[in-house]
Image (cartoon, rainbow, N blue to C red; front, side, top):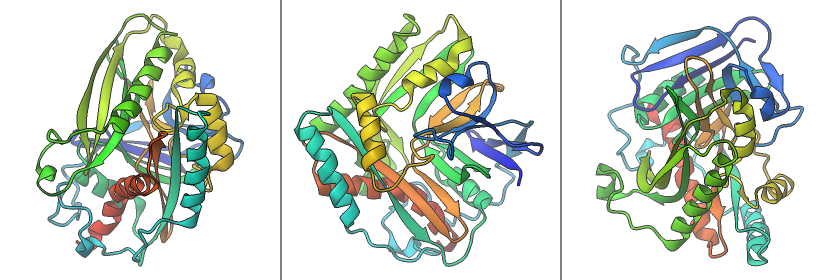
Length: 361
């Protein structure tokens, strides 16, 4: 099978497709091997022999989204996600806490109470069974129509399988000589009249503010290893689908752009998807989460093609015929509450569920 990727940048009216018709994507075992390379990168949370870093190479082709006839019904990003009339093609699922999540939460949270970690991210997976198969490219076009603010990408390779993401989190982005990354953490759900705005009336809890500051401090320490020429703006409230987050923007310049892989090695995974101390939290997650993350909470996007736009693979799903494996996680601090963290993952999974629901809306 030929490998391909198609992506749409936030607020763009077109997508870009890269299809590799000859050979297989380049497989890499370390992020530093991305130094000097170009192509569409698909990186996992944990790099292994069975889930390597992939670089899809081919000619970039523009796809005009405005000319596409996408059936997303009359509802939009502002439609309340909990509306049961939108269930459509999905087999009903339980929203109750699972035994696996209870075990994982108790295990992870005990490490925070013992001061082993300052923060750690707990993720989970939920399967959505479709009554009839939907082509992945159709799901991509629905996501583009529903989520104009987000980076939307669909990737399919023999090694990774098929993944769709609609994510708000920039890992590394380039505009001319300026590079950019962000610290994105803290999550609240928009409801009722709040869906008509950008979250400007939301009041943030101490837990959310602390979580975002942890991520921002970490990114500052990473950038200091590569440049002294950077600025931080924020935090500010930003909307992503029916959620809002706290975001700080970092703009910087690099004197040597031949070592982007080295920078990515330091940045990824950020505390927004992992924890602190980073190395210890990363190893704990790998050993203790019930469901391997695979390419969830890795990153993807074009690297050194016409430009660089790498995004963390959040709000994503792995598509396998009639089953879609949805992934979501949340940052735990010492004062985290199990039911609230579960509810946050449910809210995040709605981003993908609403794409699956759209057909019958």
